[in-house]
Image (cartoon, rainbow, N blue to C red; front, side):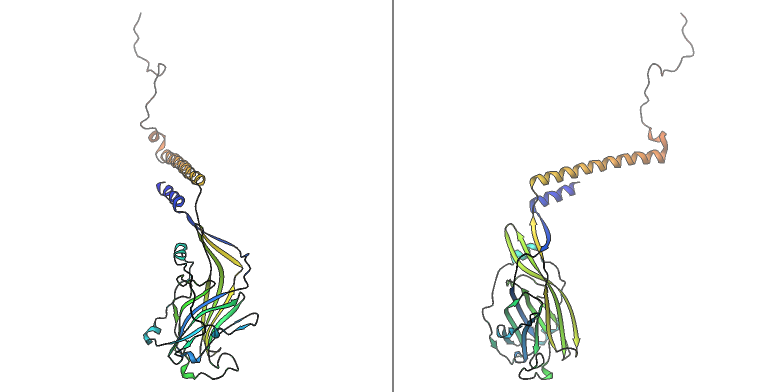
Amino acid sequence: MVFLIWVQIGGYIDGFIDHQFSVDEVIRSTLNLNVDIMVAMPCKYLDANIRDVTEDRNLAEEILNFEGLFVPNAFWNMGIQKDVHTPDLDIVLSNSLEADYVTKGVRTNLDAPTCRIYGTVPINRVQGDFHITAEGLGYPGMSGITPADSLNFTHFINEFSFGTFYPYIDNALDLTARKTNQKRHTFHYNLKVIPTVYSKLGHQIDTNQYSIRVYETDEKYAPGIFIKYDFDPIKMTVIEKRLSFFQFIIRLVTIIGGLWVIAQWMYRGMEKFILIAFGKEYYRRGEEKKSGLLDAEPEDDFEKI
């Protein structure tokens, strides 16, 4: 009883988290794709593009930054993966600091063994895919062909998100890595994106989260990293709610009344058990015998008058 009352008091003071699903009524034709990926190949051999169902090919490499890096080989042995779950409301709101990439379309150190591809690209809000492929092996007609010995699509994803760029909010693909020892290897990511609103005490964050399905192939498709995405028409709202004082009192009265009824049932059940198990004599033991004038024992001898 004390525990139940304590839970209600805590819910009244601290509130509770409610997950609501509804049809997304906001019409969005475009949104941003925020990318920060490191690939174990020189930048001079890599292309990054976006293609959607409208057959609109977005040359993302003209907007994204390609930065060559020198990364120790031990870094690629991590193979980081993680479970997908809805982030905690308080964590999301505390990390909701907007940011933006300062540079666009910059290419540096193209011969370095590792390439970091990062930036923000506007995309159509329709089904599509973002892919990183090797020069000459992704789209026909491209100049130059990547040497087979240079193919290695082992990669580390530092950021992959949709909408406003919140660098400190954890997304499903953030800080994950996958490794391959094959040259013509293809990584396939299938993402289902759902608009998500986080709200607490008037502070609201409009962002997106997604589920992931990953599989890999060898020698079957063009080698590279293919991240396909599709948008769900359902919107999820994660909101903190609080009970009104009237609702709080009603719940307390209901709990106390329910516990009182249960206690009565238990008492009656115990009486029934004792009566059946030990009989009426044991059940009535200890009861005082009522007596009156009519219950007096008759005397053997009477005084004669």
